[in-house]
Length: 298
Image (cartoon, rainbow, N blue to C red):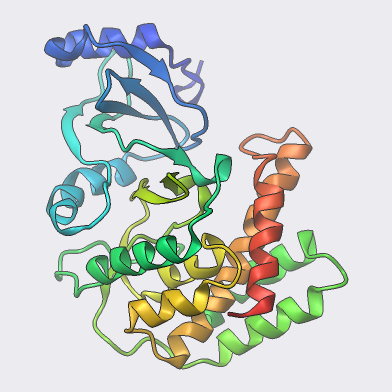
């Protein structure tokens, strides 16, 4: 059995805690649905264990360990904060981290009914996050580039899942993003992966942000795309008014990136319908709804 095929069970999680953090081993443990690169387990009422699973390296977890304790205190929404580190061992040769639990329901299994409140909340969160990052902040990898440098990926997604009746309109949005000026400000902190499974909701609005493994210093447009990917129809304008720091070029880049992210959600849904590894059947409708919002604009 290879490392990636290790079966992660409640018993394994408890054994690891007993070995490395025995004071936590008596807490209740239960699996959290979802997760691909990492698998989550609830630990008592206020904690969670994040287990490296399919991620080939521990880099994403190590990034969260380093930077989230610094970022979390100034963010206006709850985010998972590392509290204990689990190191590779003979029993489990990968990294794992005990983090604070962010209560709420993932948006891909929930909904937002208080759209204006959610728009204001997301704008306030991103205002607080999008500040100049230190020189040591992580650089971009597969995310963070100007849309013009992501055209191959966009084309592949467009060909794979875009409905024929809107493909031309989606391409037009993308072409406009490609033509927009690049980010000219200093690199700012960017979450990098704001999609419906990485935010939680309660009482009809956003109540937390999770999974910072892809965070980087760069162009905030990658997060501003969430105005269409996450928020209900008709609230993008409110979001940008409240965010107040996005110029026309940033909004154009963000809308194109939102189109690409919507297509990706649709592809993951398609993969789920086909039973492929990592596929998420419920992401298909979520992605199509987001794409419709992108095409409607504001």
